[in-house]
Length: 363
Figure 1: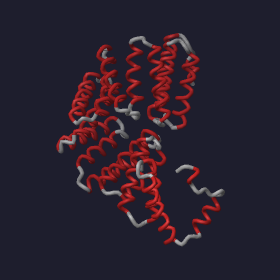
Figure 2: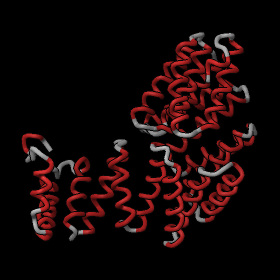
Figure 3: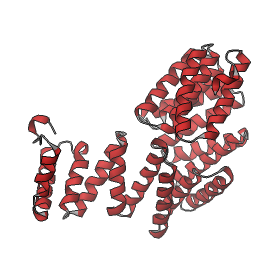
Figure 4: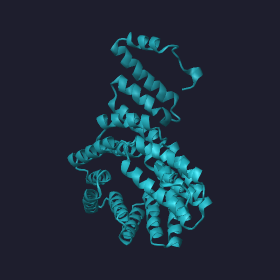
């Protein structure tokens, strides 16, 4: 709301006191009136103010149907705008008041927000389990398959593989091809970690095919990047370049900011192998900036480590140390000791090979 049209209290205590002096019934009526007025004034573009209308409807207390509508509308807008605090608040409310499919969508988005943007594994796990319980109780098998996917993503390799297989079987049984594609693609990621590159490649190709069939461009673009990683590991740099380039083009075409930093990272890795180091660094810098802008913590530190590695290859040790300090600070702060040690070892080995920095520089 514009400052010139908004009534501003000069002191929060005065505002709060005036609010509390209103009888509860009067307050509820004023909130309902405020929701109606905002709906009229901003009728041409309600999405940016949907969260405010939802708040007034909640405090008005009489129109739960409209509150559901504006809570979901505001949550979707906040999620798309990467306003994570507002999105979490609205989605948590939608879990309580929403119809089953609205609540399922809220759990889905909360899982992704807590895991990818907040690095809150406990919060992600809570919503994955809640989605599984809701989907089972409401007989929504496609959501069961999705919840199993989410839970698998929080487990160790053996347990994760078991859950991904269960998810795939469940999804295939009811022809829910989106969770099926996600499950098989994630199985490919585990095979990639185990260096079973041929098997991982087959899984990624199957996931891409399923995503294409379901017209899920995000999944196609994302797993093309994963496929490029396997082709790169097998030495087929021409095919890897084409796959990563196609994946980036798809995700850029639909402005999929959530997945672009990862896709750019895959393409940069191919450029690195092709010894196109300056192009690689430029792309990684763009990926890191986007990850920072949308608070994508899950990818940001990986990009910092990648930039440190490329800086070493470019014979710029000071630049490498700058990026490493940023990544190390985040990993220490978030208790990611395993990832910290792995990244440190990789950088130390590369620096030693290039005779640039002593091992204790990475401590």
